[in-house]
Amino acid sequence: MVTVPYALTRVGVLMTPEPGNDLEAEGVLNPATGHTPDGQLYLLPRLVASGNVSRVGLAAVEVKDGVPVGVRREGVVLAPDAGWERGKNNAGVEDPRVTWIPSLRTHVMTYVAYGPLGPKPALAVSPDLRNWERLGPLHFEYQPDLDTDLNLFPNKDTVFFPEPVPGPDGEPSYAMLHRPMWDLGWFREGEGVHLPAGVTDDRPGIWVSFVPVELVTRDVRNLVHLRNHRLVAMSEYPFEELKIGAGPAPLRVPEGWLVIHHGVTGEQPQGFDPTTQKVSYAAGALLLDASDVTRVIARTPEPLLVPETDEERIGTVGNVVFPTAIEEVDGVRYVFYGMADAAIGVARLARTP
Image 1 (cartoon, rainbow, N blue to C red):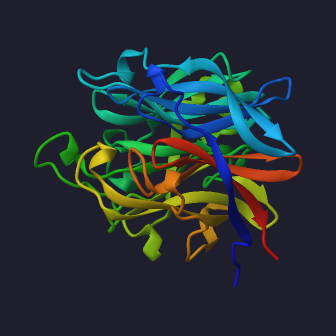
Image 2 (image 1 turned 90 degrees about the vertical axis):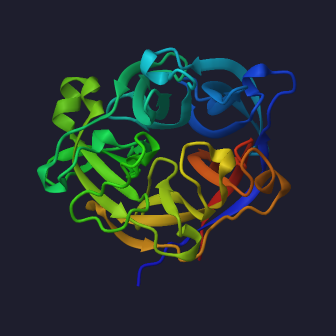
Image 3 (image 1 turned 135 degrees about the horizontal axis):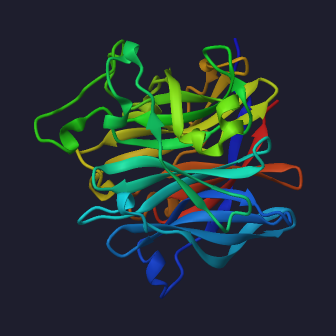
């Protein structure tokens, strides 16, 4: 039997809200990461201002003895400036995930635009982490066998693989994990849950969609036009009882693709306000087949990291560890994660014997 031979060991708190900084009044959390052309490691944290308005910041990671220990802020790189990133009473660009794709020589940021119809996934690209070009909301091509339009649904936890993979149609493709949410009652009272054909579990799970390499090589803007949608994984174990979602960009390892994900338990009322939830977020892991990323070959029956420290248990939403990025520093891999929707922690990722 294939197992997931990886473990997480917490290192410490990397970033907390800056006193007196209005842009961070409600927390810093769920960061992306990347390297600028000069090799400097950067954090791109979600900064939450008063009124739950989120922006994406930029902060250089300070390393001591090979370990990330702090940050140096350099401002904001993405704000909810586009009309579709704002509603009448809400706004935000949230939970960025950044994947450096060498074949495109660009950083690809997927993020959640909190616009007029709630959370919708969007994409931006940058050569240097500082200057981002919006490519717009993601578009999921109609797929008759699903008997629905994936564009109808709120969607989160979107992240691209760092290199092309085989697509279901045999074409080399760029692939993106995502997590649709099927309850349209959030927007329209009484509308309720609409499940795609063949799906019987209404809990949010991890899906994958693809874009042929040929189309993206022709025009990087084609990254937003996704097709060949497949369900990858649903909740299976107790720590994932409510839902699961992808975290950092998948990491190529000898066994396949390692996906660090979150699993949620507890009580979750309807709506998008996380402060109303009585939940616990833990980190687990999946291994996907390198030759077919729609196929899970192993997963962790127990979480790799659960909320234990004060920073993870007490915050805007208590009892949350929410992994969103992986980086290597001096030969050691580190996972960066949100802590209780208020701060950012770091844990060491290591292969187990």
